[in-house]
Figure 1 (cartoon, helix red, strand yellow):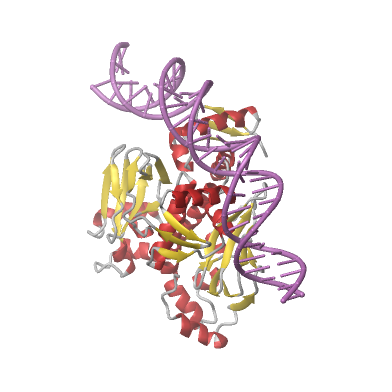
Figure 2 (figure 1 turned 45 degrees about the vertical axis):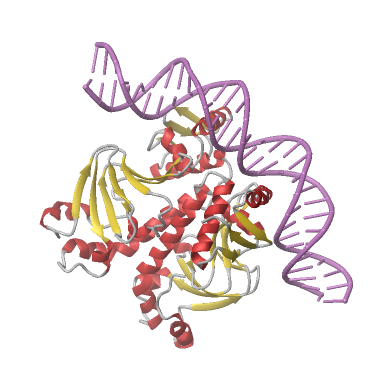
Length: 210
Length: 210
DNA sequence: AATAATTTGTTGCTTTTGCAACAGAAAAAC
DNA sequence: GTTTTTCTGTTGCAAAAGCAACAAATTATT
């Protein structure tokens, strides 16, 4: 959650706002957007969940990012190389605001409140994104499945301020997020249980180490 | 290279600039900085090369980022969890400017040109960082050593606008950058040659595919 | 409430990757 | 210009991860 502006006021007043901002609602599994060069779309997820996914030639799916309330995403964060398609898919019913980065950068001519507020908080928003991406890189550079899992768990544990939590997405998706094979991950989860690192009931994890 | 301001003027006038900016010179293998929470350091590499590295408990070294001229780095981009130490090490003689992010964000009281210019271009600087990090994530999520190598090569190829290039760092470092074992990487490089994907003479690579 | 679809959990087998150790080449230091 | 250090290149073996296939459990759909 990056937005430290008053998001409620922001959204409540949306109806009277700038016509250059669009709000759309997506149902589960709908494609919210596909990244296309030069369009420079910038989006805010107002509710629901969504994933930025990439499919490679071997049929592997990678969840590049997982978004929840008030996360930001869009082409403006990518140097798009046509090599591989990037899609944002809704995991459940989701509301999304669509901007053009150009309107934020060079002050939208309508001079509306929305673009103004956003323009002011943009550096902080992007900085939050950088921090998230750096955490993601830390996870991905771990050398073993075990270390990736433990790294991810401690991340969720820090975020929820608890040693016991439900995973924010299915295990199938977790494997695609950590960029590992699902069955190998399941095997490692079993070993983590046997070795006394975690308890696990379905998608609920309890960390047993300090 | 993120800075699209006039870096020469910027640096030439440095001597008469704000006392809150420090310029330091490091020789090969010196530690430029170690990331420490709350200090919020922000750095610009003016010349030379440097790596952001992390050492894990198994003795693995990971090159988290590789910096060259005008790249930016510093604690301000990290949510520092004391888990693992992050060091920036000079690969060759390097000049570095040190700022405090707070001086940039809340306008340095000296009201100096340096902080002003930087403050204005900060969103774009950070956005460039985000793009770099996203490319890095794309590399790290590749499932095999072969795909990581090919992905990295095409990245360098795009940057140098040529199918033939010298790697910007030793192969030992490339392995630590891709987060893979060096000998396994060497084996895969041999296979890539045998399979006709690349030619390789020492650290010079020629891509043979379109 | 019944059926369909998705997700979890498991396993045998194969392939890939990592580890360790060392020789030769190249680069840096003296 | 010689010595020392770092880097490249190679290999056999061990360990880890991927693949394929399927049953059981759970969750959606109608």
